[in-house]
Length: 177
Image 1 (cartoon, rainbow, N blue to C red):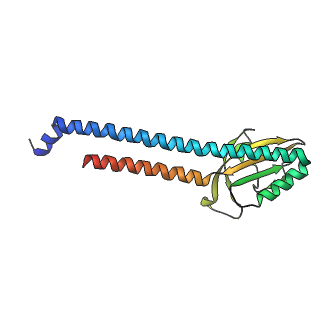
Image 2 (image 1 turned 45 degrees about the vertical axis):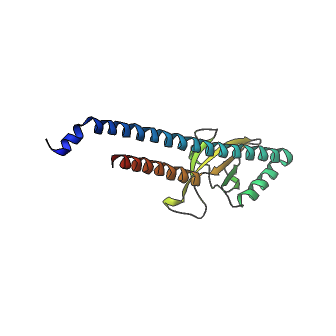
Image 3 (image 1 turned 60 degrees about the vertical axis):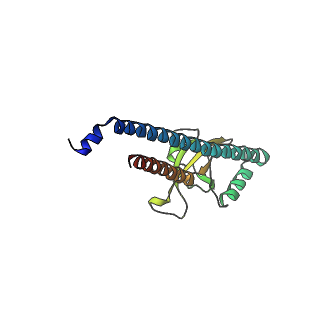
């Protein structure tokens, strides 16, 4: 029997492996929980922002009708940031906004949706961005889509997930050593 086989068959070595496995599993659960809660918090903040935006746009419509709503959307669309808007008429033509077309994800639902879009002036695979938005009917046959670009949040969540996996792998390696 070699020294390696004696080590592998020893009870202390097996117990050490079992404890290390339990520790890595617990660390994975903690990292997963933290990532899940962080993602949930960020998503809720985006939804709260969308709800406030929709309330403000409804007030603009009630105060001045379609003309005022279109004017406010046109103004907000030119401002830098993550806000996305599209106001279309009953015929599907764009009235105002910084989205070029109705995202296909909204054709199947009249509620909120995650969707992809391409920023104006950008091309290629990196130009596709993630967003979340809601679709609202506007009196007169119009439809308003209000959204937020969440690409940065999506990348942040991906980076945090990779960091968590690397941390768990490092913990496992340190445990083996």
